[in-house]
Length: 239
Image (tube, rainbow, N blue to C red):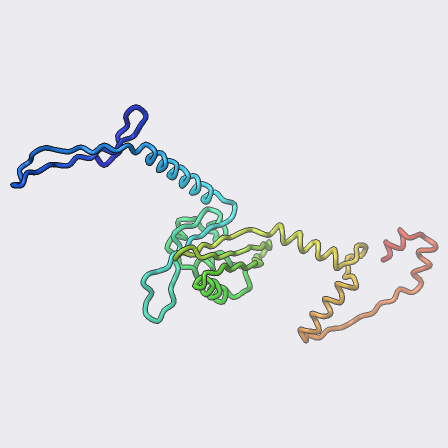
């Protein structure tokens, strides 16, 4: 029949074939009945698992873009990757709807996702494709700036068979906490200016950049008298 038949909670695959005589005339038919209950249950479980996985991927908080190679590539031209799937989170990073990403090449998608990045998209794309050819994973943290806000994105590219999967993860909270910890470690808790360690690091960067600059040294004469006469809380306010 081509489709399993159900009987008493079991499934059967029933197929019919004609029996012909030597001269080609029909002599009868054969029926082959095979119990496919276990096979059918496995297929149903697989379909349910695939549907569950699609739902998880589609509603994941991180962006997922699946890119497929263009075959065949034109002579002398690099192999291009085009989007065959993008979930809602990926579309959010690109500021478009998911359907409009389908068919776009990897360069177009990177341009949409990395809008506001000061880095070189072409160089990053070459790194991704080169690593994919060697079966390697590429991970890059990028800072995205706009007129009103700043965010950080972790872009990971992993080859899967002949495809390339891009994962886009918002790491803005992690980076803000890290920067806050660095500011706390490198600044004076009372005044907010750089600590000695923070100043040495900043000065080293200026020296290495050969940008030049000005060093201003300030000494507070008589500050001890403020502490002695008015107390340390007032001295802290003066600082």
